[in-house]
Length: 262
Ligand SMILES: *[C@@H]1O[C@H](CO)[C@@H](O)[C@H](O)[C@H]1NC(C)=O
Ligand SMILES: *[C@@H]1O[C@H](CO)[C@@H](O)[C@H](O)[C@H]1NC(C)=O
Ligand SMILES: *[C@@H]1O[C@H](CO)[C@@H](O)[C@H](O)[C@H]1NC(C)=O
Ligand SMILES: *[C@@H]1O[C@H](CO)[C@@H](O)[C@H](O)[C@H]1NC(C)=O
Image (cartoon, rainbow, N blue to C red; front, side, top):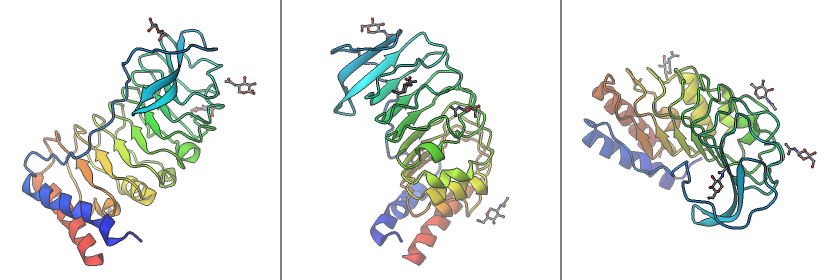
């Protein structure tokens, strides 16, 4: 049971939302930058070819063991087992085999700008500390099915600019119980399926969802109910065919569900 305190954010949001629903912008939380463009400094150690392994690299204000690789068409073996941040942006990696299995300390994996077509159960096995996964600009046409592998630790997931087309999120998303932030920008979601909303609602921690530029055309008045307890930020901007009245009705229904059960 959520306390009445944790129910307030959406109420506040929905009032703000109704006031500014013409621009359809409910953005309140800034996303962390997936790519760390800072130059690597520090001690090198045993490190796969085409990678830099850096001890004590600052990441979100804390020193981490970071590995950054370039010029790869597959993930290398032999990434140090104490790696906490792995940046594989801008390679041409198309799948994940067994290369990550030993990385139980890995907290952040960034694979922006690669060629991943699918992430299925088992692909992220062993990544028991993974909290941030950034998959921007790959070729994923299905939701990555990863909550059986990393559901107990994952907090941030970016699947923006992929080829998702509105098929339902797998039921296993209910196991992503710590997921707070989900970025779906620039996929194609004409509607949000009930199955997706049910799975995301069951996960129970989602605070921020970005669904801007997803070609949304309709929002059911009950659509936000599964998320109402936790959501504080929903970005539906740049969906020009989405009727403003439908957004207002969905926010209003969510707000009154919260206040009547509070
Ligand atoms: C490793 O770091 C050096 C120095 O910053 C840089 O010139 C090189 O391109 C980096 N290599 C990789 C694979 O990132
Ligand atoms: C994982 O660890 C095992 C045991 O130390 C080792 O044999 C294997 O090569 C490692 N796998 C990778 C991908 O580094
Ligand atoms: C990764 O996922 C692909 C596609 O679902 C699958 O074929 C492959 O066996 C998986 N790899 C591992 C190590 O689980
Ligand atoms: C989705 O769920 C709502 C109630 O939450 C229901 O009214 C609607 O008919 C459902 N739509 C589909 C396609 O099942």
